[in-house]
Each structure stands twice: as structure tokens, then as C-alpha cells.
Amino acid sequence: MGKPVDAAEAASWYRRAADRGHVLAQHNLGNIHFAGTGVVQDAALAAQWWRLAAEAGDAIPQYRLGNLFEQGLGVSQDREAALRWYRNAAGRGNRDAAAALLRLGAN
Image (cartoon, rainbow, N blue to C red):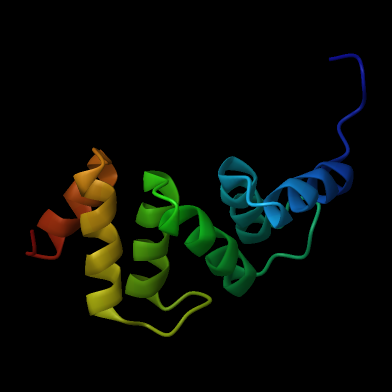
């Protein structure tokens, strides 16, 4: 939109909004920490931000937390936690989460 992309500046604004409870900002802050876009890549920080958004009902971070718990990335590997987050996300219509439940033989 007429300005150069500044990932670090974007991260700073996401952080301000996320600290004030903005769910989409928490979701996006998890995304950028997981990818390392404008911040240090850190799956544990991604998990922390995604958890806040997931607890507020955002299905995509719920699915992503399921992935992290399934693989043990940034959190301890925990099949039951993975299934719980996948179920939450699938219950909100997330098809990837529903597929993960099928793949794991759980519903």
C-alpha cells in the first residue's frame, strides 16, 4: 500500500494489539514467531500466542496447537493434548483438524 514491507515493525504492532487481547493479533503473532518473520523463530512463543487465540475460540490456532503437541514442537509431545485441540478446531469446522483426527484414528 505504498510503503515498504517491514516485518519487524509489523511484529511490534501485532504485539501491542495482542497484549491488549486482540485475538487475530495473537493468532498472527503466533504465526510470525513460528515462521521467524520479523522476529526470532521460536515454536514455544508461537505456542503461547496461539494458545491465547485458541482459548478465545479461533479454530486455526487450535489446529496449529494440535500439530505442535502431536510433533512436540515448542511444547512437550502430548497425544491427548493434540487430540483435544484437533477436536476443538474440527468442532468449529476446521477440515485440516478433522483430517488429523481421522489420520490418528480418533474422532
